[in-house]
Length: 400
Image 1 (tube, rainbow, N blue to C red):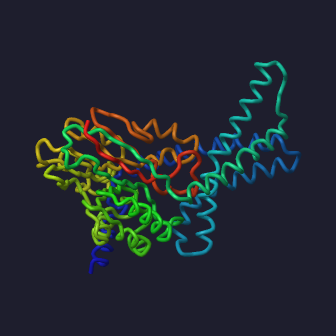
Image 2: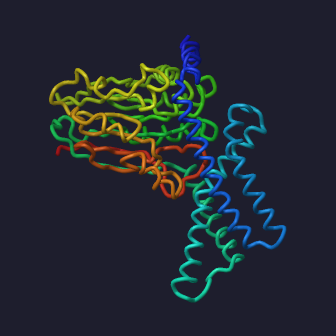
Image 3: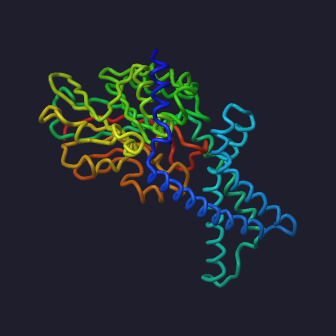
């Protein structure tokens, strides 16, 4: 019966429920992104073709154009050709190139910079001929992509962080919260990979486990079996979960129901009180900032989440996006745990993430609250991490 209830909830939240404004903004952003991406692809193709003779240069333009078109085709294949072998091939190709494009673009810009400095600053003339530049681009990009794939698919790095908390009672001194975020089980990450994450978390014997959103990239009916290892998470004071934006692309209420079925506490704009040694800690959680666009009852409300919390008790807030800290200011939150950014995932995109989020990764104080932003435990889309490694975070609370 629980399965049928989750499936029914998923069907209730469909794109038809989005308002016209949300759809138009999404279309405009998509067109802008494709236009920008298309221009950058032309730049890369021009640099590669410049170093190749005759027909090879034309072929370079054709290959880069095909790779650009593969990106939107991959997202289309994800839905239209799900379960078909061709769909898997197209989607993997799109993901791999989407991830590869960042390092390739960086290599092109870097070698262009070297040529410019050599020609216009040192006066020594071009250091790199077009042919040598093409070779240098490949020599830089290919090892980077191999390293990025191994990093993304490898074991998550354990980050240990100590956070000073005011009013922390002696009974709570040293309490450890293990955070995972942005797991993104879906097309390229499965139950086998998730089992390894669960084993890593349980090996730490945490007091609390916090899952800060973006668990999935797909509907409940397709990913239910892949998520079963999550039910094996263990923590002395409970395992808590809040939604991320990706859950809402596939049915936010359905995923909340499924996570509850797995025995995990869902914090839907609500809180729980953890008591140890006679001292209390408030663990609160909010829905994702985008939740209200899909369902009004899923609007992000830190004020509701903390309503009725015991006076004087330190407060930890689970919120998928770091910028929720601006909504929570004045509510007495001592520590906010977030994710969403992936730390940028693939260089150089972390610099663009900073335009939207106040913290890309790590610990920072915002509006009087400590905010820790995880780089994420999995990855989205391209099976690559160039720069920011995946992480599992052990946060230890200490008295300020």
